[in-house]
Image 1 (cartoon, rainbow, N blue to C red):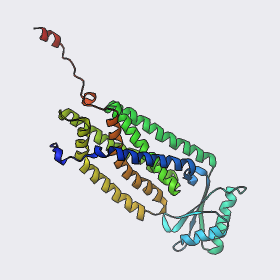
Image 2: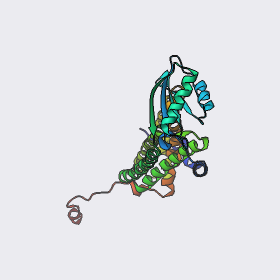
Image 3: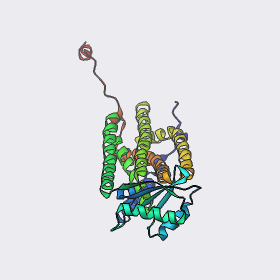
Image 4: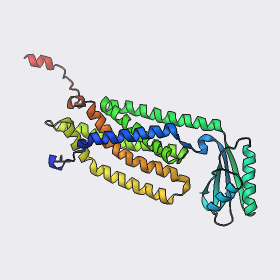
Length: 313
C-alpha cells in the first residue's frame, strides 16, 4: 500500500488532550457508579428461582408480570423462551421462603389466572454458586489482561503492551459503568459479551500497533506523533468497515433478538464503539506518552560470522 501524503493524514493525536480528559471522566464516572450503585446482578450471580411455563396461545408478558406482582413477587423477570408460547420467569430470593415454595406459588398464581398454563420446569440457583461465578468471571478478565500484556510485549514492545492493557481496562470499566448507571441486569451472557469486547478491542489495537511498527521502519524522517497519525489514517478504512458491519449485526440482535439476549447485545454494541475509540485514543496515546521511538521497534541486527575479520582486511 502506498503511504498517504501528509496532506491526507488525519491529525488524530492533535486531539489527544481532549480525548484523555474524556476517557478519564468516563472511567472515573464509571468507577464512582460501580462503587455507589454497584451492578444489578442477575440470578446467575445472586441465586433465585427460575420457572419455565407454557401457554396454549401467545403469552402476554405484561399480563404475567402484573399477575406475579399482584401475587407478591417483587420485580419478577418475565421473557419469552424459545417461542411466543413459552416463557421464562426469574424470581429473586425471598427471605424466609424456600425456593420450592416460591416455584409453587408462581405456578399457582399463573394457573389461577389461566388454568391451561403448563409448568415445564423449575430450577434453583444458590447464592454460593452465584458468588463463585462472579469470582471466576472476574478472574477470567484479569487473566486475559495479563496474557495480553505478555503477548503484546513479546510481539511488539512493552510500551505497546501497556497501552493495550490500559485500553482494554478502559473498555471494560466503562462498559461495566454503563450497566451500573442504567442498572441493567448483569448476567452470564453479559459477562460473555464483556470478554468478547476484550477480544474485539485487542484485535483493533494489534492492527494499529503492527502498522505503527511497519511505518517506523519505512519512514525515516518523521516524528513519533506523525508516524502514529499516518498509521491510524491508513487503518481508518479497515476500522470503519469492520466496526460498521459489526454494529449492524448487533443492532439487529438488540432490536429483534428478544429479551433473552438484550443485555448481551447491549454490552457488545457499546463495547464495539468504545473499543474502536480506545484503539485510537488510548492504546496509541499511552505508547506515545511513554516515549516509544523508532529505535525501540527496529529489528536487532545479527552480526555475521567472520564479519570482524573481514573488516580488518
